[in-house]
Image (tube, rainbow, N blue to C red):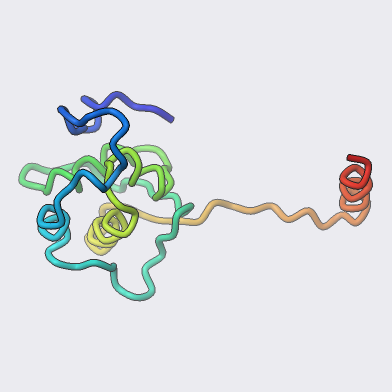
Length: 131
């Protein structure tokens, strides 16, 4: 899922090929999270957690929070948010925890469908053995 940088409040002037999160000074990351390097214990976010905005950005909101709310108009994985924002996943999780605590986003894990039919599992096993 690609979105134009100008839509996301993206960062202009970055050199292509720079690694996400490596261009930012530690001071900037410290400021973004208020000095926190990890979100609170028990937060629901991992790499594949889907995040959905429950409200839009408001004036005066931190620009990264506003960008997250714009990006999560549709369910978006934490890892995708971090990549688009060009922030380390740990920093993205801290920002998401702030938004979750304020009721501005909701989080859920993707649904997993379990294949429990033994015939299907047997067919898959046979197919793998034939490779």
